[in-house]
Structures are given as structure tokens and as C-alpha cells.
Length: 132
Image 1 (cartoon, one colour):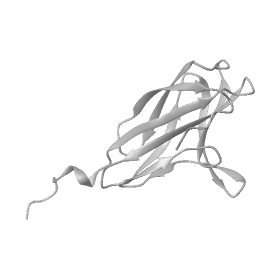
Image 2: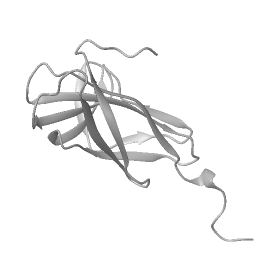
Image 3: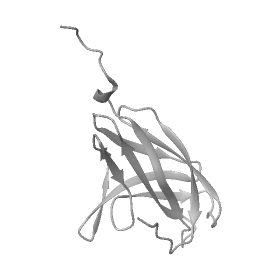
Image 4: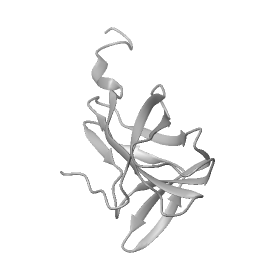
């Protein structure tokens, strides 16, 4: 028997798509949405998000109509973590400025076992809804 090593299917393989920030109605808080796809054979966890736009980024899950802050969100093996309106999402608080439609926001997603992923996220109109 060979010990350890092996194929790449025993670790996460993450990619990010569909990210956007709706233009916030208030100058100090915004929401963020993103889909993290995992094509690997092991799960990972989104543990934090950082951005120069906000002093703090928190992660929330929605259960029924109640929003609950969480320390991390699971990215399942061979699956996806979808942050979307009415569900799991990011809250950016204490903004350095109010972003406008057309701006790009830098976000860095940090994971339990994968390397951080840096993305540039478009600011969309407040009423924007992505097409599924």
C-alpha cells in the first residue's frame, strides 16, 4: 500500500462566479452575493471575507424569515455555496464610502483549507436580480 498522496479528488477545487453588490440604500451598509463552486472531492468552509470598502464583513444565513450571523458557511464537495437574495449572504458594514452602480468592489474570500480567492465585484442597481 502506498501511504497518503493520491489524486486531486480528495481536496476542494474552488471557483467563484455570479458575484455582485447591490447599490446600498444607506451609506454605511451593503449586501454581497456570490456563488462558490467546488469541483473537488472534499468540502471546505468560507471562513471570512475582507474588502477595503468595509470595516467588517459578516456572513449570514436565513432560516425562514430570520437572519442569523454565522462564523462560516459550508462549500460542499462536488457542490456549491450560493449566496443570494433571501438566503445566505454577506453584510458589509461601516463602509468607507457608498459605492455607485458601475463601481467595482474588491473582495477576498478566505477558506478553511483552500487559498484565498480575490475577486472584483460589480455594483449593480439596488433592484438587480441575477438571471438563473
